[in-house]
Length: 159
Image 1: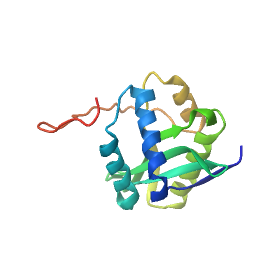
Image 2: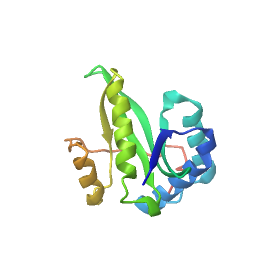
Image 3: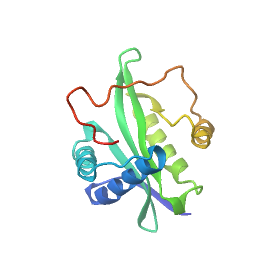
Image 4: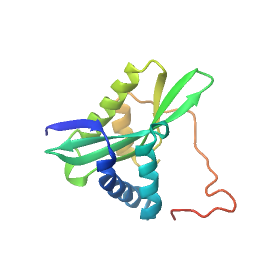
């Protein structure tokens, strides 16, 4: 499969929204509010300080996506890039799309001296994804994750 990896642009917004809807349905059995999601995707595309999307194209058609957001580490004096919103279209799975996206992001991070590492979170039951991440050189951490969402007095945007 011949893939092209590139940064997403506003022309990709519709497919990014559709892929994010698919991610939520497949991984968490949740329905996202399309208007809220479109605003969120648009905000990332409009303001690079929020993050960026990278897409994989095959024959001019987007078949995968990966979003990166940023976390400053005062302990390490550098940026962690968080890999998020990963989606590969079903007909392109098991064809190296995730690997190509990840390696492109990893190389960009390596080329930026302010980036000190890559992180992602995953569903605990998704052992296949975890094996893929380990095969790419990622390792387990001692950290868990907790949250308060939505904040008191605010409505949740997904179930």
